[in-house]
Length: 270
Image (cartoon, rainbow, N blue to C red; front, side, top):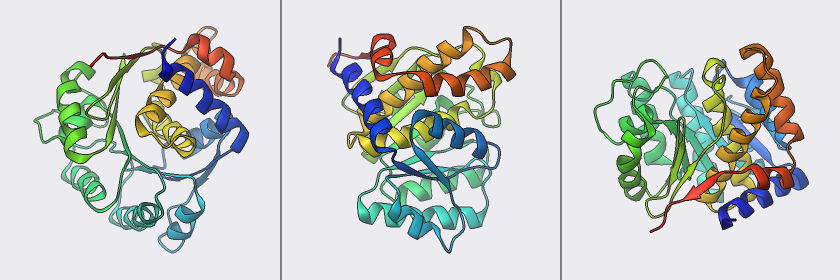
């Protein structure tokens, strides 16, 4: 059993024991579902985006998740305010660049957040990651049009350039900090039919990074956790609706011991 799998199990146990506060500045589409996912995991979510309170909230939280899914200029300003506080206090920051590459606003906002705050993990699909790397990528709304393998080399180079960990999600997820590479298997075919699965992955990464200072193992743990829960949920789901409900049940029911047994994180050899 790999050290990353043991670390993933220990991280889940730490979340359940400490219930870290995860501050989300996220999009309207997923606020309810990602808050419920964090609660089911064992974390404590807060959704706060008002400019006159985000600095206080970021100071209280164990991690900050910035998600640009329903972006406005006001929200960008709030994200930068919260991000600067989190950076100053050494709090983990997770960036979800939803739809980066689709419009100039989204791409510019993601790059500005990266330039002005200390992001630890970027969680995105392959198209979003490639857009941040400056490569041509035909992003279709917020959906990926490129595979994880397409983005693998660019992700490693971008991770080194920005000194961040990249979590690229797809059929097989990839996590890299530019030196280490891990691939995570799991999930279920119904997951792409439920909105906000990627956003849920980012929110859970915030919970895992709040208890694990290593962004690489934190991101791998979070994606593996969601993958195993997705497999469990899909076993008895009739379609996207029942899957969404059963996913919350699985996130809640999955114990650290069972997670360790079912976790499929494969670290590439250097």
